[in-house]
Image (cartoon, rainbow, N blue to C red; front, side, top):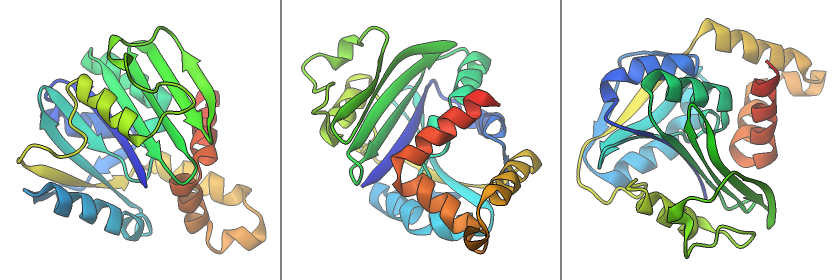
Amino acid sequence: MTNSFIAIKGNFLDKADEIFKVFKYEDTRQDIQFNDWQTFNDYLYDHYYEFANKEIAIKGMWTNNGWTVINDPEMVDTVDEIALLQISKILDTDIATFIIQTTSNSFGFTLYNGTIKRQFFVTDGEVTDNEYSPLEEEKDLNINENIFSDDILLLADKLGIDLNGKSKQTYIVKQLAYSDEMKNELEQFKQQQTPAKKESWWKFWWTANATIMGFAMWLLKYFHEK
């Protein structure tokens, strides 16, 4: 199971265009709405690879309990630390990210507000990041090498963030085109691959990103160095 979420404190659906521009996307204005959580979730994870091959990113988005939540099936934006810091400054609010990747036993969360306030990450039973003071909401949870999916979901729940679609409401799938800046970065990535990989460069890029947490960490390092 792979899930990654970005939760922004406040109702910012009306600022979706501004938010996604920071991530280097352009809104195609072709939203799809769902009233059922499971149907919405299935659509995201059944179709994001198909859209990615057309250079379209699909993201889930909804508001609940004073939070705007983005479901990031590609797990790219959730680790874009520079963009998340920028958004938290623009909107002057908290941003929490959550990662659940059971294939690689990778679990983590980060809290931003102008700077990083808290960061924790485990992969394959090893704590690789444990920065800043623990949150009060972490109490009684396995925020250690034994962390699992339930701990991430319970932490989000304690923060008032519903990642399970418990509420009956409208869920939106955004269709986002890549900006010219992102296209240039992907082209540079393509050029760095060996000839054997160039034939399916996008599949290689996406697969590494979506299924191997190490590549997500490479992206994080990449954005730091830019």
